[in-house]
Image 1: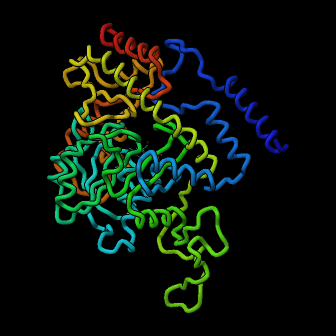
Image 2 (image 1 turned 90 degrees about the horizontal axis):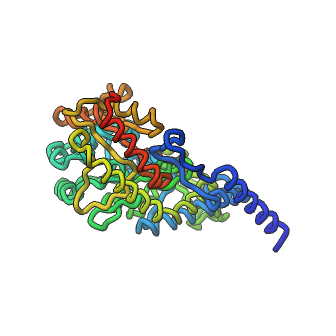
Image 3 (image 1 turned 45 degrees about the vertical axis):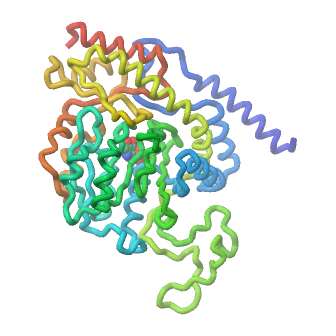
Amino acid sequence: MTEREQLRAEIARKVTELFRLEHEPDEFVPGKTRVQYAGRVFDERDMNRMVAAVLDFWLTAGPYAEQFEQKLGEFLGMPEIVPVNSGSSANLVAVTALCSERRGERRLRPGDEVIVPATSFPTTVAPLVQNRLIPVFIDCTLGDYNPDPEQIRAAVSPQTRALMFAHTLGNPADMDAIMPIVREHDLIMIEDVCDALGSTFDGQVLGTFAEVATLSFYPAHHITLGEGGAVFTRDPRLARIARSVRDWGRDCWCGYENPPDGKCGRRFEREVPGVSGHYDHRYFFTEIGYNLKLTDPQAALGLAQLEKLPDFAAARKRNFQQLYSGLQEWEQQLLLPRWHAKADPSWFAFPISVRASAPFNRQQLMRHLEGARVETRVLFAGNVLRQPGFSGIDCRVVGELPVSDRVLRSTFFVGVYPGLDEARIDYMLEVFADFMRADLR
Ligand SMILES: Cc1ncc(COP(=O)(O)O)c(C=O)c1O
């Protein structure tokens, strides 16, 4: 072993020791330990991968980012992965890339309509507004909280060019009903899989139905890079545009190796249109871009997390089932989640709607759960159109969106993430039962 290797091995041992002292999960104390709705799940291997990348000190996207791209592509079975710094950035890059002039007739133009559910995460809708597209808001279905296929059909007009939606909380939308509408109207589909990494419909991984799809690696999600996200597609031309949008808008795709003559081998053979003489390809800009790149320490963490993904997914499904069985007793008052017979959801969380007939409201139940240290969240924006930031946007609305308004008023979710175990779920069920049985309201 060289001196460098010895030092690195010693640091790795110390990191492992520190992990055990500082981060090993504490014993669960009912009523005291917070039962989170989500959170990072990591061990000494994750910390050591990230520390190794910090010691390499590459900092920007480098060798680890390239490996992460490859491994994530293998998991999804997709050839083109464009890692970015968040799920919101992934949505922005995907939509902006679809608007690129370089896509010719297939490009989305300002004023084109894009169908999107009103029950959305805000940054699934924001990139449409940012690109001067017109969101056409549709309602969702209660219980699965996904776009209502009948509403998608009703929303299509001669101006409609695309459909963008998230598979809500990991629950696959009804792709058997949606895909024929997409094909019939030649819609460009964008799947937001930020909450649904690894979920399948009829055996097909979500995100692979669409022209382009997006992921988030925020700590709440199926794997985490701290912050992070990815765009993925089968289309190499779209992926190249997405990389350019991510990387300041430049045409160059050299990556971290940065060979003197460029990866294309033609670094000094390019011309700026209309100007004779060559121009360095590294500063040749073909898109209006941003800088939304990942860093190498984040990617290193992502590699370690990907190895855990199958176990994470199994834990999410197990926790979901335990909660589902336990809460069935209260179905008169609580509407439990529904999923399609062909869906195999890797659940992000467990959504519940308080029935209109229940003798209590959502706020009372959420307060009780939170008081007992069980974390809750409402279903993102509920009806995004009711959120002040979206009140003035140029859009079209299909119908009255009654279900989205119900979601706004009565839906919330609790956790199923792999940081929860049988004891914690049992405790959650007890806390629900206390509220339902006793006169705590
Ligand atoms: C469905 C959906 N899309 C997009 C995002 C945005 O991801 P990020 O937080 O990584 O920006 C989220 C966030 O949690 C989400 O739930």
